[in-house]
Length: 270
Length: 296
Image (tube, rainbow over all chains, first blue to last red; front, side):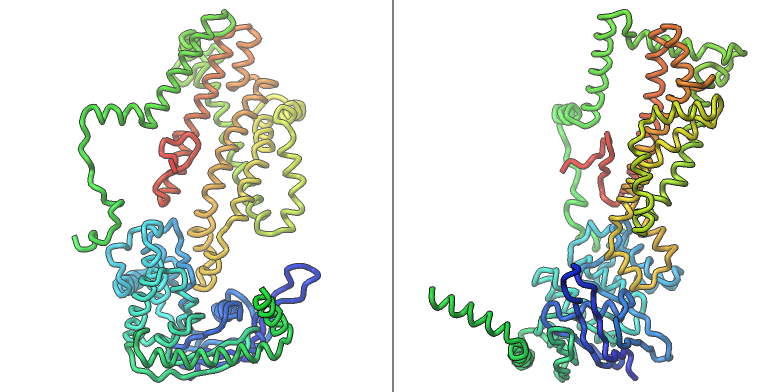
């Protein structure tokens, strides 16, 4: 059963000034996600990936189209959201930040929080304020917060893009282990193809303008590492899809080709 | 301990033992030493200025007056520790300022928040608030004395109309600075509005709120004293004017000092403590005159 259904989703933002056109971030995005899958949405910056997650989470409304989430019991799915930055309340401790998003702040919630705090390796830091934690630890707290609401669907918006390479690599490995242990349905947004190949079993490629471009299945065994030859091969294949997408974009918009030619000509002349 | 091995070293830096000389040098260069040196210097300058002219009371003369005022029965009644000119007049002024502050907070906080939240409310109220800010307190004081005469209404009304606009502006700024990303996070997790108000909106506005209340207290207290000076038969302002009319410089200076001490006591004793408590997550508090102000 599909846990997330997106039907012809369009999102337009009002123009920044009166003389500019409306900004269309999503233009008919259409797909479904079934349970216990790790799906990555990959696309160039500005193609509407984060906007789509905001629509799924209810932060924003689509201009047209429909997004619906359903859990196994037929009710709207519970969502967890890991943002690019940790978005922790700076005046609350790690424990209080996790309690803040719980529908019920009872002993059961506290026990659950403790379980996920330990899962992300933050035991002993529960009473610390975010300012006393490193960027990686703050992001771990963000992941623990998302998991602690026991979501049916976990949304992750480039959660490692603000971290240094070593911390990001460690957290990616940990995320794989967590996913294998919990089998939560994940919708992971990234523009890093290698990251998507390492983590996901399905990749949806979104083109400029917020349209579906490709939907790929990644049938590689877990755990995966970025240095695995199979992962590198898969990355190369997906990058070819991106090149095809870029080629079509240039064909569709002749202005881009002209600008590129002009720039190339200028460089040759100099 | 297993977990402490992961704690950043700065949080658990071991205390170093200092020599006696080093300890004295640290004390001499501390914030506390700087504050007490400044206070002592102020008293010395005051004493020096007082010795130049008979019209400038010295600290000793002022202190003697305050003691005398404490020993006078209120309105020539029977003396008791609470029924004397100093305590009774001060209590009356404090009561008026306290009531006024309740109104200032009840009006200023929701109005400022609404102005930041809804641009139509801001458009409607901006000019009114600007007029309130621009009109000097003494104009309000004279007007309220003419409107209400003696009693409590004039000082309370004057304090409310003078102090509220400043609080409104600071609360407005605070509500405009509410972190959008944290609000989005709260909405994504369906955090109830009441919880958001208590745990997100109020703490993020606490700095602006405390600064606004701090300014409002100073403004309201000044207004109460001013109205009592212009037209009242009781209160600290009335008593200061009484001694002014009697050309008693010690009396005027004495009541000036009492008024000042009240403001400083409320600010340091109450507001700064609240500020420190509310902002303890920062690790240091940057309040005006705070000894724990950030040094970076």
